Image 1 (cartoon, helix red, strand yellow):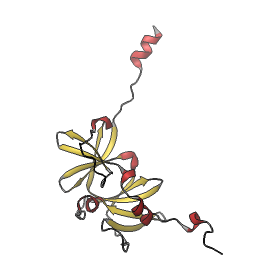
Image 2: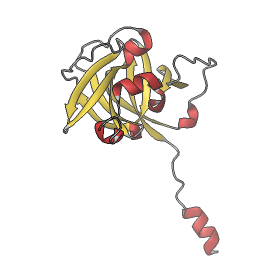
Image 3: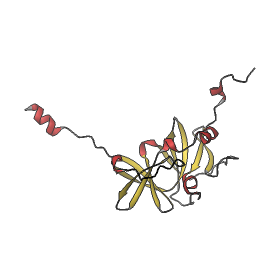
Image 4: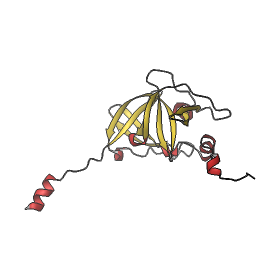
Length: 171
């Protein structure tokens, strides 16, 4: 009897996850909220010379330099529109902090990640564009943070520090 009672009262863990929703133009995209460190207003950035056009720059955050990329410029070649809802979103990127300029990043959505389905294209140039989910507002595409940067851009934005290099090259 106690086994039956425990089965009835057992709490089923929800499979829903929280996503931060943003726009690129009129299209909706989402980041998994657990990848988000902090949502900041758009801040002044220091440009990085010879970086791809979608590298918006760097800024100091809690005594650490953080590179920032413009997702709109990276995806469609158009810089993020400066509006009050354009945010600088700090995310976890492979053990480091990365800033993302995101338009209209002011909404969240709780849904089951399994609701996102492959969209039928294997686009090697944009591995960060994940599966899509359909709802009453249309399609929503999941942006995969760990796939945002190519190895070359990652090396540009996160060069090894002198501490990482040890004493290589020092005599």
